[in-house]
Length: 166
Ligand code: FES
Image (cartoon, rainbow, N blue to C red; front, side):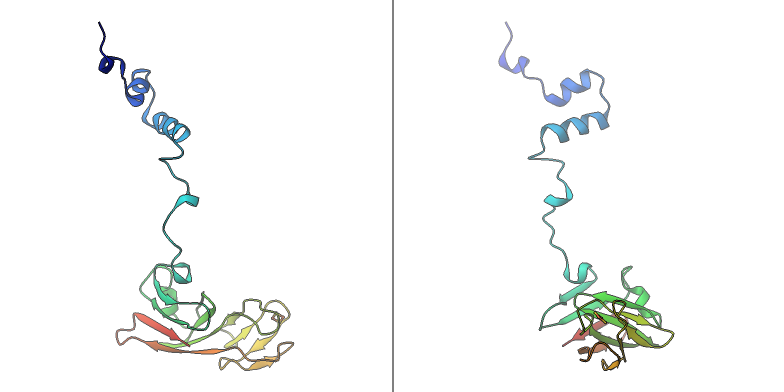
């Protein structure tokens, strides 16, 4: 007489007995148990870090901007090179010269398009309608008429962390 235990064969053991490979087993598990395993990216409970990178800590948007950028990280080590820039949250952070940084609001004051830094002319261009801004935020060329907001930047003593603050 068979016992209940003898009749209970795990799904994995059963499939293995049919000669399915490990990858085929994983596919089976994913199809059959979508509620409990093999989660998709949409199910990832990890929140998006500020500025879209784990190398940024603090507040990168809104009125209370105050964040630190790890300049040794893969995402932002380029900011150690003069002429490079990054868009972080609501800001554009620019490496203007050796260990000098400027941070401004990234949204063009004309219609809100994200601006770019032009290292050749050391100014800021809005790619939408061609407004230009100086590094102090003032308008160099319209149609924008209002300046970009300038944030305070402070480089750590070791040069590896940049603070941007409203
Ligand atoms: S949105 Fe920048 S110039 Fe129009």
